[in-house]
Length: 340
Image 1: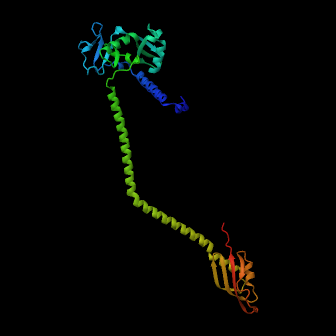
Image 2: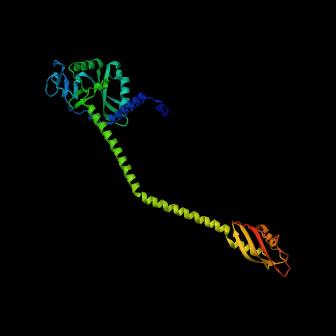
Image 3: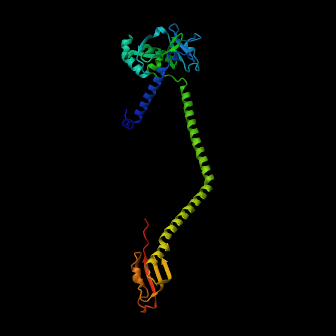
């Protein structure tokens, strides 16, 4: 069976596979049980086949005819056969599971016993198991004889839950199940109701536990909500403070006046002095005085850090002698040195 076959199977096929798997698993478990596990005493009413009785069956323990059974005694009833009614054989077979063992015996039933395969109804129980061999006991009965016994019981409105072989150590085999006949209602439906109720109870307990866990989690979340909101506000403030500090660091790196002053000190010619310095977003304005023979703008153009030098009073600047001071008002763009 592949995954593709499993996904493509319909519901009847899946039910059949599940039934086969359940039968195989229970057969494997039953095959591992010792032979004594099935030779237990029956707890309910037992009737035994008795050719001398008019009905053909008598109640074990009382000797009364099966006609005398009450409605309560018919629940979970076992019909016991005598050793002369069936054929028993003990054989050794490979250590197979119960399902595989029955298939193998069904193919070899003609060789094992005198009953033809279509007429043979057989059941098997393990006696001793080893790693290499399995000793089993096989019981077989002709189908027409078994159906005759079942019809005689049905005529008395008796539908047994099991037809077994009665021996001194207990009851063996189950020919009713081996024949593939539906067993009478022996109260098993009550057990199935109990099982279903327990399963429903377990599911309900699981659901109740999940609901209780969810409610406890919700209560814990609601209880911690104020602390969580406070922590969230603190985190938001910290993030804003970090952003502000990063902005200040960038702004300080871009507006640091010390490199500008160093560049101006190196670019201004001797004798020139600055009366006012304005610096904003790389825009520099210099206002001051210099000797009349010195061209301050030309000197600033020689600096690698200053660009776009413009004399704001170039049109109205009067000529000056060498020994006279001349005012200057110059604008420029400062190019800070790139950091590595």
